[in-house]
Amino acid sequence: MSSVDAYSDDIFISSEHAVSPYILEYTDMMKVYKTGMLITAPSLIFLGIPMYHLVGCVSQFVGWAVDAYSTHKVCDLCEDERFSKYGLDKYFMETNPELGLHPRKDELLSKKHLTSTAKNIVKSAALPPLGLGRLIIAPMIYRHHAGVRKHIKKSFELGDAVKRMLEEGESEQGIRKWLRSVE
Image 1 (cartoon, rainbow, N blue to C red):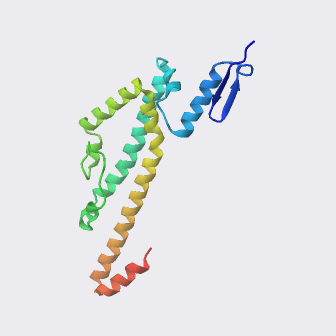
Image 2: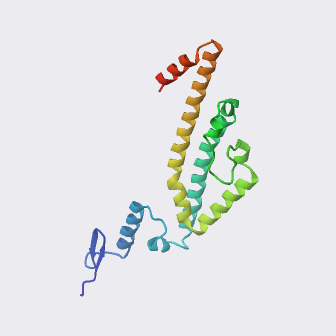
């Protein structure tokens, strides 16, 4: 019996020890996971398997839902009159080209935006790595939006405090000194 060996970066598998050809495919998938590359030859072997395509759809939907939920929470703050009054609209903007710079909550559920989302879900059914990619970045998007919310809320608190100080007749230097002392 001849020994056919396969070398894959840090994994050496001899044909004498390989019980099935799926071992190589599994190790390749783990390399794909570790490096973050989603569309590779090992993922192509799953094309045509209904569950694989369903996972792509569901992943895209869950990723979109996380993004929409966290964006919705930021939109709540952006609709507050203090957002533009305190000049925050110059610093915080939506980067999604399908939405405006300062989207309202109803724009998130507009027919145009939902149609685009549905198209992305269909694309993820055809190419599941697209949906998996969306799911992978969803926690980062949520964390970013949470930071934006926190920053806007803190800006509202500072703006309200400065407004109170102005109403009480505090001097500009007194307000500047107080602002320097605030984290």
